[in-house]
Length: 168
Image (cartoon, rainbow, N blue to C red; front, side):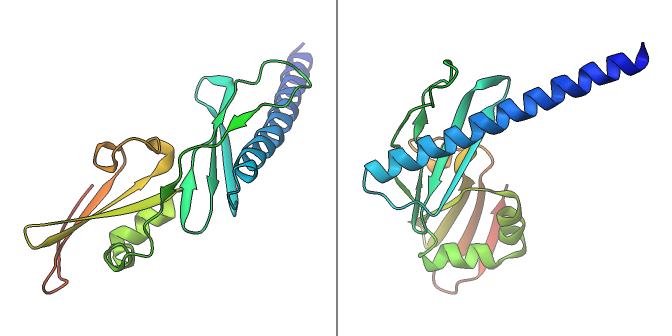
């Protein structure tokens, strides 16, 4: 009886894995097709099921200088691939020298190790350059970067370039 239960669980796990793999491949195709239809280059795609919703997937298209989050229609009908609508493009900000300085710090390297879709933004105020890094996965493209969860902020003195502080 114990072996039969283990066999049933293993079979269920195998079916779940095969189904998730098939949906994943179709979601990747939907993201790539949506971005290419919009004339946008795609260097990398990242898709994953939403927590607690195995039929709803989030997808991201990444080019070298920007990223977007195409909206993937809910996958409901077996045999019909999910459709995606191109998302709004967001500059990654890596070409800004202040973002480069932030990424070169120990904290910036730790953030890059963790983040899958890092974005950077610089705001200049009161003689400081404030660099905010965030992961697009945890804040939609249209959410202001300052309101994004899982963001890290670096404050630099604009005149000397010295790091004044880091806030997680």
